[in-house]
Amino acid sequence: MVGWVVLITGGLTGIGRAAALAFAKEGSIVVVAGRRNEAGAELVKELRACGPEAEFMNADVRKEGDVRALIDKTVARFGRLDVAINNAGTEGTSGPLTEQTPETYAATFDTNVLGVLLCMKHELRVMKSQGFGNIVNISSTMGSRGAANASLYVASKHAVEGLTKSGALEAAAFSVRVNAVAPGPVETSMLDRFTGSPDRKSGLLASIPLRRAGKPEELADAILFLASDKASFITGHIISVNGGRTAS
Image 1 (cartoon, rainbow, N blue to C red):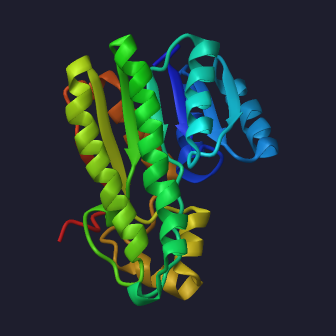
Image 2 (image 1 turned 90 degrees about the horizontal axis):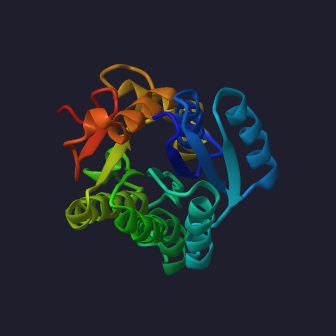
Image 3 (image 1 turned 45 degrees about the vertical axis):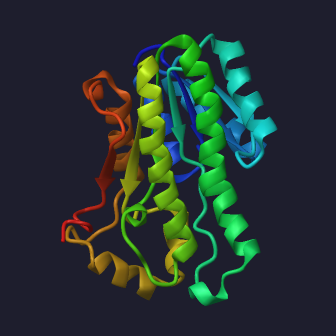
């Protein structure tokens, strides 16, 4: 991974941040995309302290112009795009399906689905011309099962897995792999927002066979594996990293 050019959306916190640091420690050039310039500048300092080079680029994955510019600037700056991690996401608005609206739908799907679609569109545009590349999308345990009061989030992650598999079939023709990592509950601010209270969080974690939440660094390890040459014959696959939550 030394010298690889790696782009990570939603890379300022949680799993994305852990992945950025992990790639930097492997010697990769890391481009982190997000919407908070000050936080981006601080992360770049950390990345440059342990890797060869890093850049922050402000981009909103819901806007195609931003996504196109992000990909093109990355290639113009570093010459190519080896790996793309599409991590930007939101938990959306929880509650009964009967209370969801077109507005809550758009708030969830514009980031979780449209954002992934636009990123894949422009990443694959570049990778096709290169004849190489590797995409890892971030799904969720909920990408393959249902959950009461989380219908929009669940549906959005099902869509991410569908985009991953379909994109893999198309990209195989030009030697590009597309996979996804599906985390279970992970110790992030999103998990705290999603559960809403310490009691609800404890109840959720009690349902996990390993009896704990995952660490962002554990998800980063799975992402690095899928991006690496050790996974060279894996494409169109969803790796679950969830402490056994979907084993039964």
